[in-house]
Length: 540
Image 1 (cartoon, helix red, strand yellow):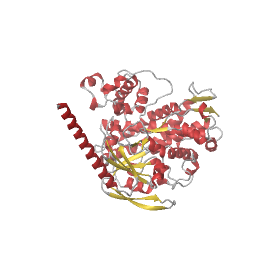
Image 2: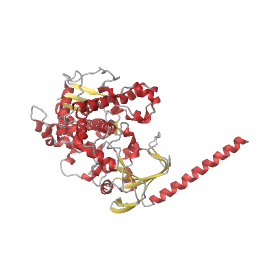
Image 3: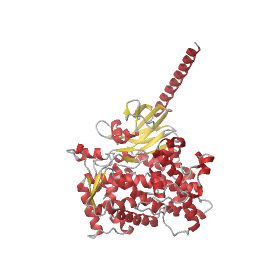
Image 4: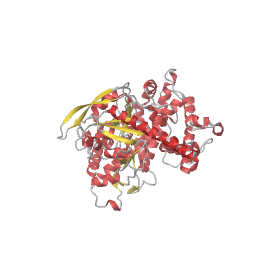
């Protein structure tokens, strides 16, 4: 009998909870108002569920990426809303209107960054990405001088040297063609070596380096590589769980080797590891001991340049936290963007030939890649790179939130196809999602947006509708680094190799567009990640 009363009591509490949640959900939906169309969902999109979309239940981030501008077209408006009940009642407004996005990105106090969503990037310490307001200003002031023309020149020179070094490896040298089941098998190490040299000031070669220095359990090259692609393991798993799988153990060890995340370590583990002998700590100490201001142009040395300023001086945690962000931002994003670029060029052979002929017109018949000072002459390389970023942006959505009640004016479409201005009330504490893919595929700004057309970037183009590097005060501080590296890799490789698709039997007979859907499937994780891009590189 007592058990029955307990069950009735629990049932009553559950009903009360659900009723309260329902009323809160309805109240939040009324605040958004009936004028802005959108989704009313049980679960928020950040909860991983096995389906992409279940009407009225959930809509995943992967589904929204696949829809591009389709969701906005469905609602007939460049903004739409979402209200969800679980895990807590929340609302969001998603935007694909460049004029509204400009207002949001320039009004920092009205639309701050929700830094709590970026705490996963603070595994090594506070940094420029996971910060806002005064802290962000401090980091930007400290970091900005590192991204200068001397560093860009270093990026260009090191990148060209690394790619040319690749051609001399046994896997490439003397071979008529080289095939990859997934092209990131080559773009990831190239990007890793570049960030090692131009970011950390550490040369990493194509030659196998299996030696482990005294005091370490893993070579620097391996630790750098594993750390850059294993952030989810560090963030999502408690330390004890990493011992359940060998890959997770290896990832955990790689993070420890670069630096110890002090917060979660037990005293026994602290005693186990000699902190001063771990790579990042060593790099700071060694560089301070031998450092001459202005002698080195990598990003790490640039950060040390500000150490004489007692106000702007970064703590070790802040220094390492920002260097780690350079690693994350400069490795996977570059490698994945290049994978999409090579895949598109393999599909669209006419565009690849145009690019090759343009490169030859700059380099001359000997094909020698000129120095950084000539980079701006490779206009077609930049156009191909930008068009890839438009179609496959590294970040598909940027998070903000409304700090106050406000009204935004967007563009809506009538059934007859005409456009009109629409005012949208946005309550305080509403999440704002800047849809990069929505803007990049918005037909009001891009003619035939689904087509791969690099020529659209050879003349005037709608700059406010192109935002792979964010905008406003939060614009990507490493944009020039990223562009310089990407152009150097793309130009050097295409000048010597023709890229084709490594066809699968089931792709025979497909049109180019159908094959593109198969070849360039992607998933938005930390950055937009290609699933598998099989390509062949044939010597010209």
